[in-house]
Image (spheres, rainbow, N blue to C red):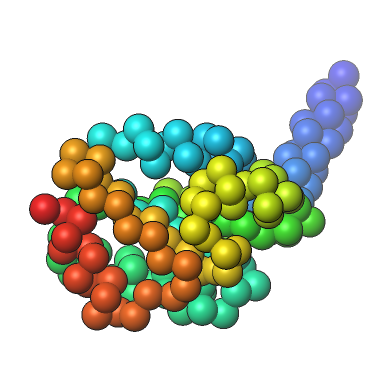
Length: 164
């Protein structure tokens, strides 16, 4: 009986390790729809930056660390939400990628593949290029969309405007 219990415990451990390895991490990134992202933007109660990015996008990967560092340096209370547009086949590796790089913002995964549809839902001015960012503060009616990488100085300026 003891051998059966040990064998069963070993099998459960192996299955758990395998599941974590397949997901890339023990913490899964939340999947969201374009409607959920739009609702989050429209209903936010504080200043927020929503950044659209992907692990394969060089400018995206260069931009996020200085978003984090500038926000930390300024002791900003602005919420940073990083919405991954990675391919579905890469979703299982996303959590490990984010953890390895130490991203500080909330990370979500846009679980949609029809760019024409999700772009029109989120921001009609968006041409589809990434990185793309939306700066929003509904309390002050501030809204700014960037359909490209934002220069550091402009990011700092927008962050200051957003927090007012």
